[in-house]
Image 1 (spheres, rainbow, N blue to C red):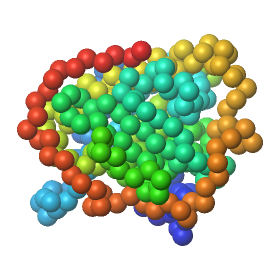
Image 2: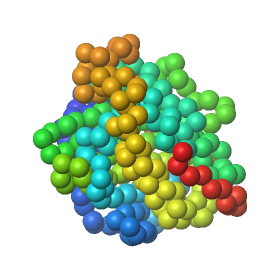
Image 3: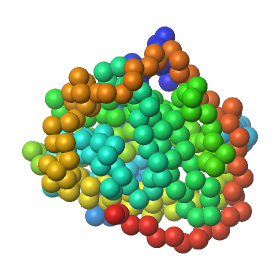
Length: 270
């Protein structure tokens, strides 16, 4: 991934993410119901044959047409850390660490994995871009000197993850989520299947529901505070991006969970 001399993403990174969101090449459809679709990437044959010991990178893409929430509202939902605690059923802990520029920060996120797998966490650099007709948020894993891997979580890797939101009308939008990640472990096949056929659609339904409820919630919770739109409102400490480095997959421990069976948990939106 090209970022020039800085760890911050350049225009080429955003363009590549946009291209991946729009492309249909080498994607296998796993779910197509109720205006929502989920795909997983079909790895190139050469990759599967040659790199059997390479990191187990999982790439998934979800897209839904939202007919009752504007693109700008969905964008606000994804940025609003206080609101996320209300709607994200998988989240264990999430906080912003520091700001890196007017459109980039670094943060921590941990989440509950399907039982009996160990929970995961990530430290990611997040950056965003807004134009007249689209909203982009991307993130990738970084090393932060004060937030090393913890014993109670498996430190996962986001290679490139994010959202691409495009208005369809004044109160409707196309909403795409794409994740290329290494969960740092040998996952059983049922997890991969469940992620694409059950967990991803459920997560998309949760974020849609969150978008429907956000305007009313925001009216009661600092309605004028949106530092992702107004950088002068940002109170995070400033950090030099040079203090961060890209988190490589080979520097973290793998966990073998391939023999674990599905506990059939059922977590719905709050």
